[in-house]
Each structure stands twice: as structure tokens, then as C-alpha cells.
Amino acid sequence: METIIEVSHLKKDFQNESAIRDVSFKIEKGEIFGFLGPSGSGKTTTIKILTAQLLASGGKVRIFNEDAKALKQPASRSRFGILTDNSGLYTRLSVEENLLLYSKLYNLPESSVKEALTFVNLYEERKKRISVLSKGMIQRVTLARAILHKPELLFLDEPTSALDPVNTKHIYEGLRKLNEMGTTIFLTTHDMAEAEILCDRIAFLDAGEIRAIGTPSQLKRQFGDDSLTVELTDGRKEVIGKGAEDAKQMFEWMQNNLVDRVMTNEPSLGDIFVQVTGRKLL
Amino acid sequence: MSTSVKRIQAILIKDYKETSRNMAVSSMLFLPLILAAFYSRAGFDSIQGHFMGINFTFTMVCTYIQCCLIAEEKEKNTLRSLMLSPASTPEILIGKSSLTFLSTMIVIVGCMILTEYMPGNVAVMAIALILSAVFYLAVGTFLGLYAKSVMESSVIVLPVLGIFSLGPMAMAFVDSYPILKIVEWLPSTQIILLAEILEESFTLGDLVQPFAAIIGWIVVATIATIIAFNKRMVD
Image (cartoon, rainbow over all chains, first blue to last red; front, top):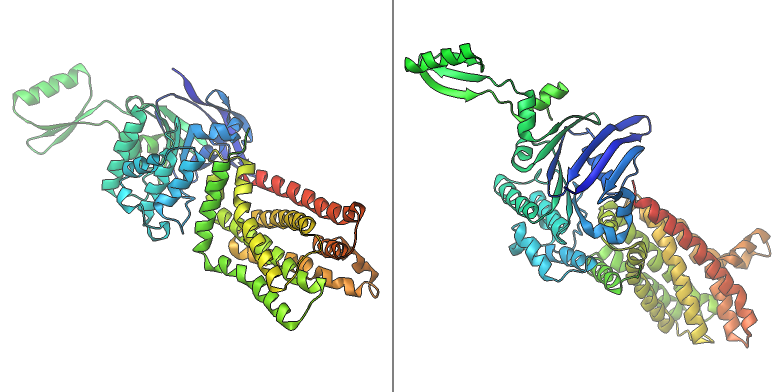
């Protein structure tokens, strides 16, 4: 597997405050990697360092097997796309005019604009000025700009934060399609459901440190208790484990037709986050 | 790394579309023309009078508009988006300056027509005007990069308007206040001195001082602008 991002012992201090304390992780080619954490946990700072918009105070960052500073070179900038909370769109220009500018900067054919707008379900709105669009539509135009040049690596900072459920689903399908075509995705979010749907691996970031990292199923195994809740027909709720005694008890209930429902007690990613950080994700 | 004309052109076209829809900025193009028309009707037929409109164009169109355009890009985070695209620093800076440069040149020609000014040597004056425009563009870009908002940019540009537009007038008080001799070295004064030289018979040696002074200002302003731009590439 080819490593696309390699971060080791990353630190970032702002005056007397540490935004990132000691962060290390690797992202392989073709992965969708989720960086989860509450507001102020260091997610956006990490993206800014990875895209060479911010200098780290310590540690190493390698992207495409080169120092992250190499992304400052114009030629390297074609290799990644970025969506941040600041749209960076020209409000007096139309959706199409904004994307046409970038298609020329990336030396792409004009057809790339139609392709990107269709991807985010905005082709019909292409003549509208950015200033009249809703927040969700602006988010989709920003995403269209980020994927216009089909980057090898895509940084998405809270990509669906302003979208309604229908467009969120549409974007998820699109991101999966992009990923199948080979785009590696680095996604920050505080939406646990989004991370579970999209991400191959997840890191929980809290107060500038990674508290847990792994695939969703690995994390659930690591932090789950493997127990089952059994709802019985007489209204009782019993929690049983995986031991021989538990199996015997379960068999007995089944023989007596007492089992109404059986549910796993697998924790959600939100539960795991609370478990590892001691606080809720806001 | 080669500079792409296509990218520069794309930024220029984008700026044209944006500025033509921004009345606050595009209306500035008419102020020097109104001033030139006023001077012409008032009968100011001196080099100083002709250059009042031209120097006003440099500060009001070249520096002010450039400063506003850059500050707006910064305020709306669009400059960072450009910086994250494959466009290089020279491509962005040249692209972002092209519209202001062309507008400045058109307005200057308009002022010259209105005040019926014909330089003693058109080619030499054209070179001096182009070089001066480069200086004023660099100042506008520099100030725009430091302004936090468009509102702030229109304030911080005021000292430049005062010093460079009105500076040459201070030459009239040099005898009473020798310290004011310093304004002789302003690019706006040097271009007037150059225009006066061109009205008489001159040698190449006579042109050295005004051109050297203007080029000196360009070098300082350009270096400061490139440093400021590269600083703005990172938070």
C-alpha cells in the first residue's frame, strides 16, 4: 500500500496555547480517513498544516512522500483539492463563472465544469450568482470546485454541515464514487453518523491529541462489551454475555417462547467518543 | 517554471466581470476624468495642471482600485483559494494587476485628451507612465494585502493619495521650507520633472535621474509586495 499522508508527532502552538499536542497517523492511498472531534479540537488546524497553509511548531508531515511544504509549489497543488468552511467563491459571479475560472487555472476543458456541477446536483442552477444561493448550495459549489480537477487527495472540512438530508445523501454517494475512482479522502467532521457511513478508518481528536484510531468495527470491538440485551415477552429486559451460563439461560428462554427481541449492545461511535474523551461531541 | 498567459487571462477576465458589477469600485474610474475636464475648462495649461489629473489617476485608479480588489479577495477568502490553485505567485500578481493597469492607462489617455496634453516625446513619456503605473500597482497590492477589509483598505490608502497626488504641489514651498525638497524624489514629482525635460531639447543623461528614481521606487515597492504576498500564503 502507498502511504499518501504520514504525520508524526505533529505539534502546533498559538502563542501560549497548544492547538495540536502530539498527533501521529498514516493514511494509505484510496482510504477515506475521518478525523473526528468537537469544535476547537484541532481538526481545521491539522488540515491547514497538511495543505501547507500553516506552519507546524514541531513534528513531521509528509504528503505524497514529500515534505508538506512541497504543496506550496504550484505544480503540486493540482494533486489535492480542499473544501473548507470559508467558501472562497466570488459572490458577484455566477456558479458557472466561478468554476470556469478554476477550470482555466487547472488547465481543464470547460466540460469539467458541467461534470462537477452535475456531481453536486447544481447544473440547473449554474447561471445563478453566488450571492443569491443558500448556504447549502454554496457548500455544494465549493465541493464542485474542490473536485473539479479530480484530485488524488481531497481534504473535506465538515463537507455536509450545511446540507439537507437529500443533498447529504447525494454527496455521500458522490464521495464514495470518487473514492472508488482512486481519490484518497481526508474528512473532518463532528457527525458520527457521517463518519460511520463514509470512513474506512477514524481518529478521535480531542484537545489536540488523538484518543483512539482504527476502523469503525475495530473501535466498536475495542470499546464495546460484547453483551446482548434480551427483551422477554413478559416485559423484562435482561443483559447477557457470551459465557456458557448465558448461553444456557438464553436457550431456556427460547425453549419457553419467552424471547421477544434480541439486541446487540455494540456502542455507537458517539458512545466510544464519550468513553475515550470523557465528554460529549458538540 | 513558466508563467501561464492562460491563467493570467483567466484572472483578468474574472476581475473584469467582478469589477463591472461593483459600482463602488468602477465609478472611481470617472473621478480623474471629471477632474481633468474641470482643469481643462478652468484653463490650467501648465505641465503641473496636466499632471494633476494623471497623478490623481495613479493614486485614485491604480493604487485605490488595486488596494480594494486585493483587500476584497482577502476579506472573502478568495485570495487563499487562488493561492491553493496551481496559479503561481507571479501569475496571481500579474493577473490581479492587469485590469487595474489597463484601466489606469485608458483613464490617463482620457485625461490627456481632455486636458489636450501632448508630451514632448510620446515614447519616453509612455515608458515613464507604464513604469509609474507598476509602482502604484505594487503600492496598492501591498496595502490591500495588509488591509483587513475593503473598508479598512479605503482608509489606509488615503495617506498615499495625499502624499503622491498632492506631494508635487509642495515643491512651490521649497524656498520657505527646505525640508520639503524631499518631495522632489516622489515618483509623482519625478514624472512632472521628466515631462518638463521632454518639452525642451534633452540628452539621454537628462533622463537618468527621473527614471532611476521611479525604478528605485518600483524595486522597493515590488520587493515589499512579494514578501507580503508570500507571508499571506500561510496563516
